[in-house]
Image (cartoon, rainbow, N blue to C red; front, side):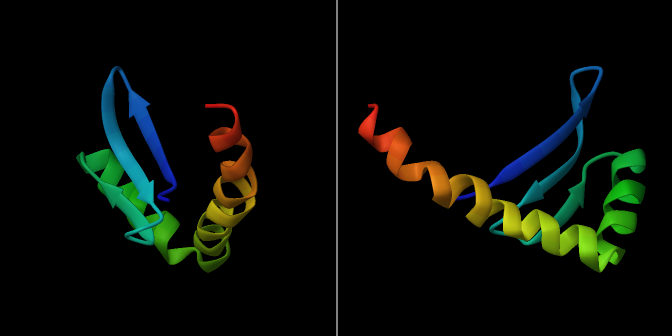
Length: 67
């Protein structure tokens, strides 16, 4: 299971967090600056990593039962 949060502006993805990478990755100049700032914030980064367990792993059985 992979948890991904993508940030878009004007249909262009500028920053993404992936639980498999474990950090933010920027795709534009603005996104690289955001990713660097968010990756330096240890509390925000650990909160994003915890969202996989809180959201994905908590609901996975419900999703598979409804398919």
